[in-house]
Image (cartoon, rainbow, N blue to C red; front, side, top):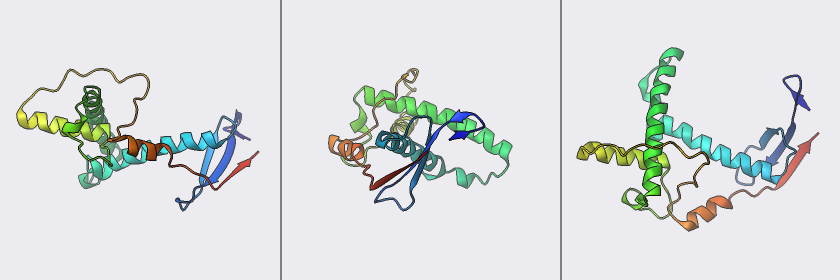
Length: 166
């Protein structure tokens, strides 16, 4: 199969027992269970990102903005704020200070939420932000509060049936 005239690709679908709708993945690589594991990890990162914009951190829907240009400017500012908060959250974890803001053993706050909480604390106490560093070239491990929670996340995908179309 090809898309956009000449790009070869593969289409595969899978049904997860705990998900109502099947997953459909278009990939340049021949599909396998690993394809869906990678897709699940990617999707698991995208959904919380939308939630952060809508309700978790920024309440974008409350802005009342509907014009594309205004929304574009808003998202540029929010993306900058998100990047700063992510870096602050990563620094917290790297400096082994997670427990100051995330004491729940099951949930595990995201780097964004950790960073937002630390920035709020710094603003309240009138402390400057730490020296920001560039994000690492490789994605750091996900922010999990416990090894048990990480094990649950790592083993959460189990497929009933995988169908490959050629």
